[in-house]
Image (cartoon, rainbow, N blue to C red; front, side, top):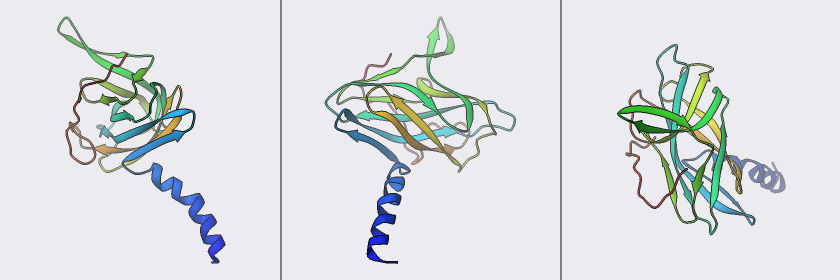
Length: 171
């Protein structure tokens, strides 16, 4: 392989490797820099038709953005949801979008905001991973790799607890 051929191959392959790591970035002159940290989901029992995915989104850019859609090939439907306490009854409600202010983060975690996956193609198994595309109003689509953790997991792929560090406003 010539050095020119190697350079072309690296130019094509290297960006793919960057998007599949623990964090994915979207950066261009017209949009803020969005970083997605530790996307993960819980394994599901056989026959389950729904699951949830979690992550932390960080806006490192100078302007606010808004997550407005999500999709994945592992489910026919992927929606933004939040869990609310309605007079002592916990409910999962769909939301139209999640604001991500400049310099802030939004944490998707069990019992809070999450991506609801319904009509799963097959159960999610521990150790598997799958792609999920997050679409932002300004940054556009960002595809991340979601790691599947054990049933009942409360943390990300690294075993760290997901927690809200404050400073975010989500709607």
